Length: 417
Image 1 (cartoon, helix red, strand yellow):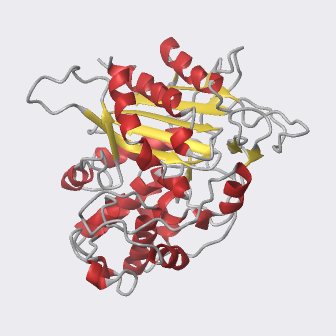
Image 2: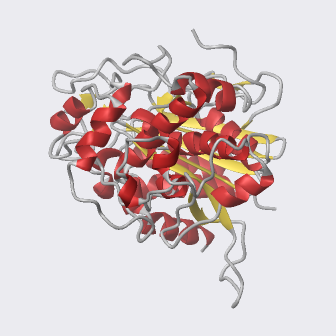
């Protein structure tokens, strides 16, 4: 029943998560691990431990991750934390096996627990963190009009505020960046270069979806504007700001805001399903143009680093407790300031009358060939993060949505008690 709570909430916000497509690494940190072998099921049979012992996934969690590969995922990595305890495991491979029609590099190598991946819209939580930091430093207020902070980018008469960009209630439409009509056209889309100014101009050529603050409408261009705002206020490029203000303080040693199309050699290989669905004949999507994703979805990270980020954020290491509370204040669509909310499998179910359901917070990333889902208890004590490869062109019709949500739910459920 607890699983159903999270799956139901995830399903309810599926349309939010379609926004991403509708529109030499340092040594691992102390809770990082790489697989040292694979069992017959494709899971790591042993894990190389650094300083803090990392345990194999409990059987029921391992089964849930295995089910994502059975449903079509090429590679999947789950990392779970509860206080000082850590579990991790992987299923599948870094890439599909080579074949005459697969259009992908040769497979080989079990998916490693610390394999980097493109984590798509989980980037939004990191960018939102910087915006809240700057607001707490007095650079602007979250309810200030964007035009007063970043003049000339959005029409002043629309009255859009910084907060409305963060929670997708600005009414700014998504630019026509992604063509989801076929796998090949979608791949072509993510290899085209854009400037933030071009993205916003393309969005402004379309009708606004609603008056500012009147409704929720997911748009990557909200975060394109926020990226421009951050660079304008700080005087630094977004990659530098994220490194200094988020990645380094949170201990995200294998996370970057990329400047080119390349990926680390040990990364998961992105794989886009053919138009017929999971199976051979798809496309290698590993190399992508970061500007196609921009401040809304360009970050490269790992499952352990995603957990490190949400732990640092919610425990007050990156913003104040008041800032965390504002970020976790969700609207009717289950979205806060750069955060999604879901039901906590460790909470009471059914929810007693008159009580608020217990929630977890995090973000989902729907990329091209890559997906990620990371959730945390609101105090930052319990996290589960899953990254996987093998995706459908249209996230709303992705056959992996339910099994991957179930895997994260199983990971969180393992932390109960």
